[in-house]
Image 1 (cartoon, rainbow over the protein chains, first blue to last red):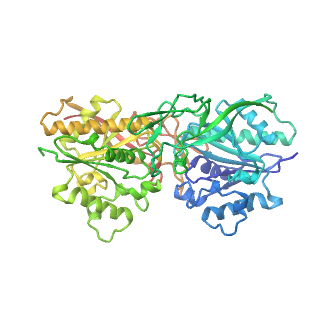
Image 2 (cartoon, chains in turn purple, cyan):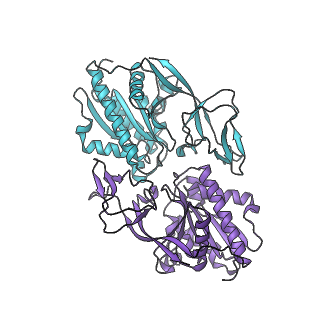
Length: 294
Length: 294
């Protein structure tokens, strides 16, 4: 990859994550903001019906519909499954119009700052992530544990370059000006970086990058009937990316009993108390903090 | 009213306001917590289908379905309209089982602390509100501007005594342990107060109460097609119950222009950036702060 010809900025993949959806509308209205000399930039409101309804999705989480086998399965026909196939067609199938870099804008109720979610370890993604985290202390880099592209159900499976951005904490269904502006600035910085890459002038970065590598997901305390009986412990709430050590409080039950983290090694929890993950049985994700050479 | 015989604690009137819904489940599991000697306490999960779906409502906002004329209208038959009629039957129609005091537990994405929402000025409601705000600095008292009971669309229209509690800031669809516990404590304090009232031993309070009286609602900046083009200004975000003076920033547009408050007198905004109110065209409510004698 010597040249990036087309960047796609995607928002509203989850219809109640307003920051990305409204940024897409702003970029569509003021295209000069995202125009750079050496490549085309396109925008996509990924789930317009869910956005109109103010819901994450109508029938199925769109950002779980991009498994290759599902995109090729003609029997899958829910609104979001069809939408995923349409997005694949728009961004990936047509060689002339194919996106070389996809930036998917999300928000989260967890205190994730400006998190870059890598689904692979492409050297350019790592370099860009290192650059962004170097110039902005709010940027964190989370790397998923997918072993192959076939395992990735996200929009970002359509393209090796690019990633999702998770910005928070912010409630679903609203805008916060500070996070809107921080996300917007990050988009411009990424576009500028791609422009410099195309000119073979990418900014120099540190040789190392702090990565948070996915380890596992942790569910809430649940009863036999599947209902929860506890919450994130107050001492852990909003402590995303901070070390959780064996014996630290992790949950508090509805009747005020503290549940401790009983693992044997330190982990770095993220996505702590993400509203959309209650239905997925995820109270948080454990990660391993590490410094890598790039 | 010399004796309160039955208190109803209602939660999940909005299905994505988890604090009240899960407190109701806790109280149902541990009824001793809400049992007092001189009255019965009943609990009600008001919108179980919306709670199961993790949504505010399925077809219509349940807490706008309690207008007297709507409850009496046999043609209204959406899920929530039928649910409202069923709740009226349970809490208000049957003289033997009628609730004398209704406490409706809500949460909000706005920074409302522990807000008591009065729909009338019954002396006992005012005294209780004064007591609660005296012993807990997080408690605020907001009084709606309904002129008669016929105008009140809330659950609390079913009964002169009681009020809603709005607790925030908290995103929809999740629990925060600190707010869960603060709400729980407030419920117990209210039950204890009712118990003392029944014993003719209500705690003494100040003779005055700070009230925030409803003035008007304010919409976001909107285009002719009804879509918004601005957000709450960062300087106003989370400043519920603080004075907004003429000339203060109120919104910021997507293209970074500040919109000032152009009124002629100071107001006290509340419900600033409540997610559920985007669809209602409400960016905030203006109130008038005043001290009244009780």
